[in-house]
Length: 67
Image 1 (tube, rainbow, N blue to C red):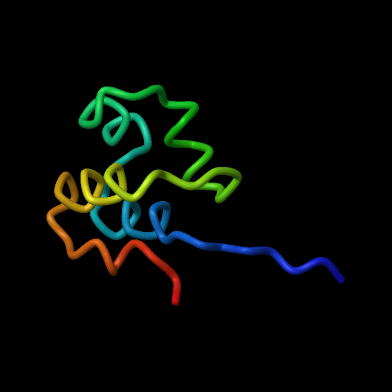
Image 2 (image 1 turned 90 degrees about the horizontal axis):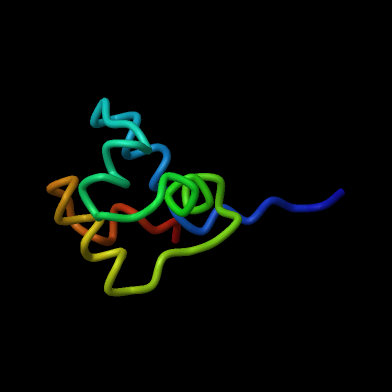
């Protein structure tokens, strides 16, 4: 069985904060497709972008990463 690697928790945190992918994309001035790829863990944001995401969501960046 193929293991799914969920490196980030962006989708979960957005749901907890009642925010959408579209909202985050607008907040970061990025495409919705990019944010969608992060939420599905098909791609990962860069470390500086991860900090921007955390700031937009008003959380600690560590809360966006699965340990």
